[in-house]
Image (cartoon, rainbow, N blue to C red; front, side):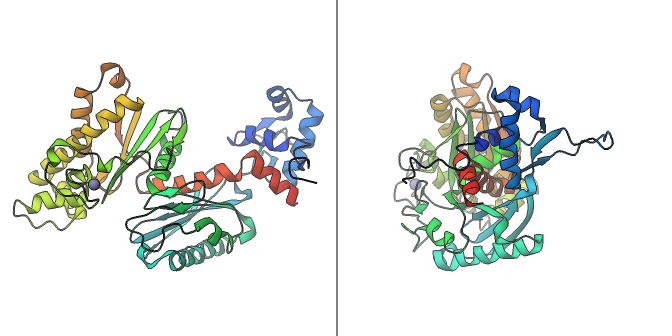
Length: 396
Ligand SMILES: [Zn+2]
């Protein structure tokens, strides 16, 4: 029988759809679920039985017990399974196991060189995953999905990197295929800024449907959430604002081969270079942050100017996609209000009044956890989708 005609185990019971209602973690009575779905209570009962058999749903222990009566409410069990989130940078890997609500249970951090190539680096990731599972007393059987963020462009539909500039050997590599041979669960791969946008929104802006996340670090990029959905664009490079030309960049070469790019003027290394031109000994972005924190006026002014440069490009973004929140993250956001003040100065004065009336420009609240939360959310979103729950049930 073909896949299109074979009724899935849950296709006949509809449990995967019922489960979508319980994914918010709130406990509900059978009567409430019947009212929400329009189904008979007996039907709701059958579907809950199927979900309990998977261990995904169970009786909710009410805070005030009424004695020997059976529990009246059911809820998703967030600890039923775990997902692995992995965030790769040029020189590091952070991994975490989260529960089904995206709560980080345990995380690990190792230094590595992404330039060592996919097999070496992904082997480390699998070893880190096993170490996390062991530390939590869980096994690979408990793992329900893997989400990976990579520091370069990724074709999301295949999980393959596309000409990533700092990742030699990764171009076109089948990341999900390789990982699945070791951890046999769905594997989702996206670029690091997109997963940071997902993580930031899920951490602090769940109700914000028009949201822009901007990463300012060694490079500059953004992740766009419009009408509640992450926008990757036709080739997966939507939001790549680092190579937009800005007036103050005139004549400054960028590593992309063009001149005058935002990234060549306002990234961490670019700010450090501008301070070095005044005779200061500032090796990189980290030292810029240190100087800002120490109250160094030159460094503060350089960071504020970088914020204004960023504001030039973000003004166009605001007029184009009309976000209600812009969150600024990445390592340079640790310069705090100085960077953001520069952004606000330009965006609020240059954008259309209607576009800025309800616009907040804020520092990332998830901070250095944005990527790992987002990688996990990517995996959870896939692993708990109706199709994936059907597949799980079919395998029981
Ligand atoms: Zn460039």
